[in-house]
Amino acid sequence: METILELRDVSKTYTEGGSEVKAVDAVSLSLLKGEVLLLMGPSGSGKTTLLSMMGCILRPSSGGITVDGTEVNRLEEKALPDVRKRYFGFVFQSFNLFPSLTAVENIELVLRMKGFAGKSPRPEALGLLDKVGLGDRAYFFPGDLSGGQKQRIAFARALVGDPPILLADEPTANLDSKRGNEVLDLLRKRAKEQGRAVVIVSHDPKAEAVADRVIFLEDGRIRV
Ligand SMILES: Nc1ncnc2c1ncn2[C@@H]1O[C@H](COP(=O)(O)OP(=O)(O)O)[C@@H](O)[C@H]1O
Ligand SMILES: [Mg+2]
Image (cartoon, rainbow, N blue to C red; front, side):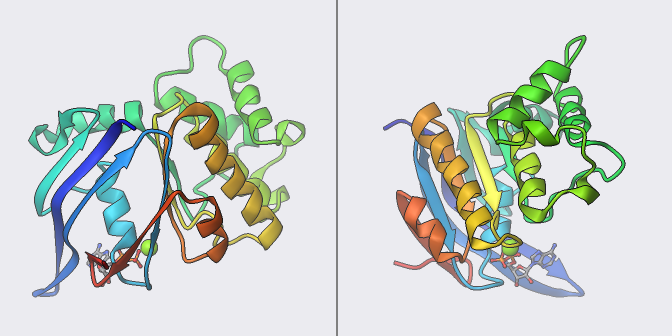
C-alpha cells in the first residue's frame, strides 16, 4: 500500500516553567492509505502531541514529516493551514461544536472555513449529516443532542472536503459502548470503503477490533 504520511525521528520537547518535558522522543512511522492505525499508551505518554504533529497543528522540535510527498517541516508557517485543509480531518474528544448553531449550521461553518461552501452549502451539509446517520437531527442544537449524536456531528465535520487522512483523539471517550462502536465503525468504513488513512488515539479495547495496526507509546517512545 501507498504511504500518505511519514514521520522520521520526530521529537517534541515542551518547556514549561524552566523545566523541559520530552513529550515525544524520536518516533518514526509510516501511515498507509486505507489503513486504520491505533495509537495506545498511558495518559501522558505523548499520544495527543504525536497526533497534533501528524496533523501539522504542532511543529516538532526535531525530525521530519512528509505528507503526500511534501516535506512539511520545510514549509513556512503560513503554508500550514492549506496543508491542514487539504489533507486532514480532525475528530477531537471534546466536540468543539458551537452551541448557538444547529447541527447543520455547525457543518456549514466548517464548509465555509475550509472554502468548500460555494453559494449554498446547505445540501452538502445535510448530505454529510446523512452519512453519519443524523439527517433527522439537522435542525437540533448541540445542547439537545446526546453525546453520541454530538460526536457524530463532529465526525461529519471531519469529512468536509473528503480529506485523505482522518485523525481521531479518543473519539469514544465520552460515549457508551454502543455509540462508541458506531463511531469506530464509521472510522473503519472511511478507511476500507474510501481508502482514507485513519489514526485513532484510544485506550478503548474496542478500538483494537477496528485497527489494522497498533502502536504503543510509553514516555514518548514507540514500545517495541
Ligand atoms: N502544551 C504543553 N505544555 C507543556 N507540557 C505539555 C503540553 N502538552 C502536553 N504536555 C506534556 O507532554 C506529555 C505528553 O502529553 P500528551 O501528548 O497530552 O499525552 P497523552 O495524550 O498520551 O495523554 C505529558 O507529560 C504532558 O504533561
Ligand atoms: Mg491525549
